Structures are given as C-alpha cells and as structure tokens.
Length: 191
Image (cartoon, rainbow, N blue to C red; front, side, top):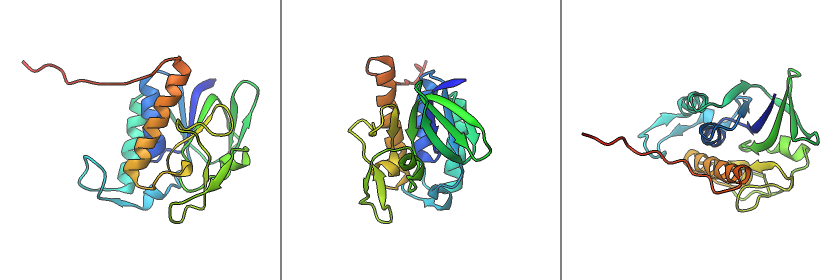
C-alpha cells in the first residue's frame, strides 16, 4: 500500500501533523522510534494543560493520531529513498513502507533526512547543531519531502513544535488538494 503521507516521528510535532492529515481523510502513516526528547520532559507551559509529563503527552498524541485515522508503526527507520512514484521508507526490521509525500518530524536528529539528501544548515536553538533548510510552508530541498518542528529550525518547546507540525500539515494538504485546506470544528448549539 502506498500512503498519501508518511510522517516520521510521533512526538508533539509529528502527532500534530498526523492528527491534521488523518482528519483530512488522506491515508497517513506515522513511524516513530520512541527516542524523542519529549520522553524526558516535564511540561508546564503547554496551553490547556497545567502540567503533564513528556511521556504522558507523547502517549496522548499517539492515541489521538490513531483516533484521527492515522496508522501508527513503531520502528527505527534506516533509509528514506525516492522510487519514481514517491518515497520508500525501510526500518531496521526490514519492513518497507511507501508514501507519496513525507513529513520529517525528527526533533534534534536530522540524520535520516540528511542521508536522503535533504539540505541542512546550522541550527540556532541551543544544543541543536543542524536543521533542514525549509521554505515558509515547510518544503525541503527535495520535492515531496517536508519538515516541521525542531528539525526544521523551530524551538524545542512542545507547544511550538506541535503548532509547527500542524502548520506544515495544513500546507501539505493544501498542496495535495489544490486549494487552501482548513479543519474547523464548532460547538453544537445548546438548547
């Protein structure tokens, strides 16, 4: 099966992108190695949550992205290559996944995208040495590969990376659908 979108990484950035893509009814794969820095965080500055542990925030994201319709796979990807029809992702277990578009939500480790040829530049966030070069919508130097969150140069704060994942997902979906894509819910009228 070829997915419309593969999101690599399921921390706040990737989970947010997956929720938006899943709700848009595009086939969405999320692959995560469960090695992100949010697993070590205690979060006191995320809107709507007085406090939450990083592991709890990550688990809520995994639950919500699956409820939105995204398919979740745990695994460490070892390669990302083009195949003329999109992209092929292979994990360390030898499993292969195919997608038309890819969103890199790799946190502080851009190695997979860099090995695939995505252009990088020096990072400015403390401890973040290298980030992907992206345009204002999140496109990288390789058509069909997008990047969001810390690996694309945003702050490591969970609320910022979550917002950036959603922002890039909306741009990707708008490109796929050929018009500006939005997803607004409203409260049901109260009697």
